[in-house]
Length: 534
Ligand code: HEM
Image (cartoon, rainbow, N blue to C red; front, side, top):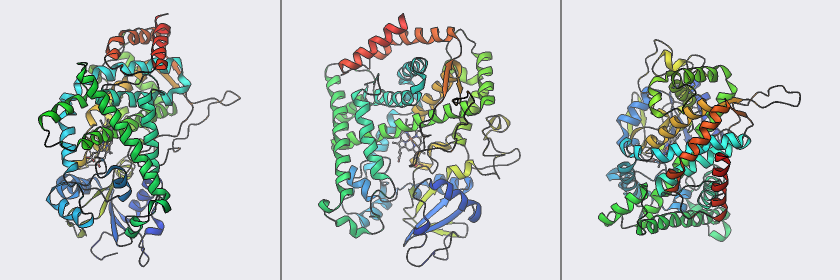
């Protein structure tokens, strides 16, 4: 380890910390090291440097204030092989420094890609634009309630259907009434392959040993896997965009995001000359927006079932403010302090992206006595910050009240510079562009689920409650609880009737997004409606 770097675990010659670098659930190990080496420490991976930030003040200074220097992503040859540098989430940062830095390592890299994609996403996903997507988000949430009511044992799948259907509707104007609907099934298939390719250890360390890039495809299964993923993604994104274009040509607009982009494309043909950029723009947004939202909601169900006191308090507040004669609406949230705290505490307790998405430096940066070199990878350890006993009282306890006691849920008297409600959504220039859509989905569904259902742990053969495992989460950069059992019951028969009625009333909203459905999808919709009407 170079002398000027932040301290960190002892290194060994040549490989540094490579032998101890965690390949799964890295946030636990990173947090353990943070308690030992401090809020900013470094790891050496061969000649490369990784800096882990578990100090909100350092995050604010380096990631927000100096974002122009820390908004790059580490190079990922495998991701480039699949998406050609066009996946917004993993794309390198644009601009002069990026151009110099990136061209040095990879000739012909499309350095302006990220900026173009990001600009295009900003114009449509602003808070004002997100309001336009509320009707379909609300209608899908009603179907979610109805699905929970009809088949509570499949709640995990219902949540995944909900989030993929919302994002496909918002972006491409087509909904998925079933988990098996073609667009959703194709998305999950391509996503599964993509996650497999990106999983640490699934491919050789090409970024550390660049010569591996040149192994011919016939001897490298990982290259064939990349090619398969590329094919799946391209087919899906091409299909979705073509469907939107055809719908536009028929004059059947429904206000979806891609309609807007296609209109812009006609006006700004020179910016979007590369049509595949537009396909990848939609693709990255679908990927970014689907499993993240469902993962939050799966954690919400888990904590509601595991912490009955918190659930009871949330329901009491709901009954007091909203009552039992109507469904809640987003406007109610202003008066629902405990529900707001419940949402913040779920983000804190089980953040969807516990290490965000790694950033990289474009310039060397001095921070206090430390010097962070250009090209270093930076992890923001959201998990470590949210579970820091110096900041939060009993951080391993799920306790929404902490957010009623203080604004950021921290111990009274502890001043923390850098925490804010948007923290789980990232930092600086790479902050999640879907934050408004995501927060609307989270708010609408938290309100509806708390209002409608009781959530309880499963029972064993003797009728005793089984403790839910709060640490059984899936590996990967995004964490979702592994599928778990939960008893879900509608709170009153009257609420069941209100849900059915609301589902029938949503028919017109759904109809605007029901295109290209299969006979099975149509049949499913008809049977749901007939059942609700009976
Ligand atoms: C609970 C829901 C969500 C959470 C917790 C979440 C969280 C995050 C986080 C932590 C990042 C990385 C930020 C960084 O590097 O500093 C990110 C990036 C991103 N998110 Fe989200 N997200 C959510 C929903 C969405 C939605 C609904 C969309 C699309 C509509 C979306 C699209 C993206 C994209 C495209 C990026 C990459 C941005 C870039 O690199 O410039 N996300 N998100």
